[in-house]
Length: 250
Ligand code: BV8
Ligand code: ZN
Image (cartoon, rainbow, N blue to C red; front, side, top):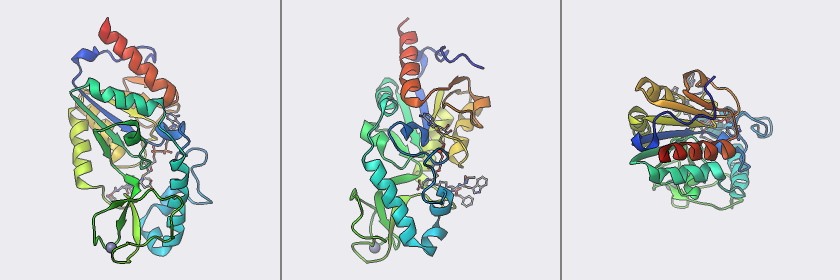
């Protein structure tokens, strides 16, 4: 088991390119329920039951009630020290790319800029007829359920990627590029079970990158990690970053 106290062996001043993949775990300490942890179920439904085109076709009201509930929860949440540390790290590297599976918008709120929201954003909506570009709507609770497009009256939907739907091309390309050129990849708070996101760290390892996992629990990626921090992200990431910065200064 790699020693958690030790920082990455490459002195920071020799690292130009860093990529990060985050999942629901990084927002857990902000109060956002994870998918597989406690509170991951809404009523009796798993995310995989509701976050699908079929579920929306069958019962758009039910799926909108679920998103309205999640928006209500997330609206009361604020970025935690792990989100803030990633926003701070961005300015230390010539090439830094933050790839998130989270739709909660907390990375952007923390000030991250070079951000790829691989699975979309719960605060952005779009017309199911694509009669107009997606729009931002932070109304909590929603004025009507199911929500309709203000221009053509067709059903509106959250601008997120549902299971069985392909990821947006530009986001996928940016994440593949970042994974293939990074020297260090951080994986924070993900169970690494959803594809293609879970393949990104393996792409990086195949290209010789150093893999660092921050997660209280083991995941399918743990065996590939050069370094493992078995701590909650809000404590583990700032400590890891400060340790690495101090190496750079030695
Ligand atoms: C696609 C947006 C082409 C919506 C999401 C069979 C085999 C392989 C793949 C497939 C398959 N069958 C179907 C697929 C493809 C499918 C997939 O991967 N399914 C899985 C379930 C097997 N993928 C897709 O459908 C993707 N599209 O592939 O298109 C295609 C099309 C058709 C058929 C084939 C291919 C689209 C996937 C995106 C779906 N949308 N979200 C919304 O949110 O409403 S996925 C959603 O779930 C999240 O975005 C995230 O990706 C995932 C949840 O995972 P995590 O974020 O990791 O959260 P989780 O709760 O699981 O884990 C939390 C972790 O944090 C734990 O490890 C825990 O220990 C840790 N933790 C807890 N507390 C802390 C912590 N860590 C640090 N600090 C803490 N405090
Ligand atoms: Zn419309």
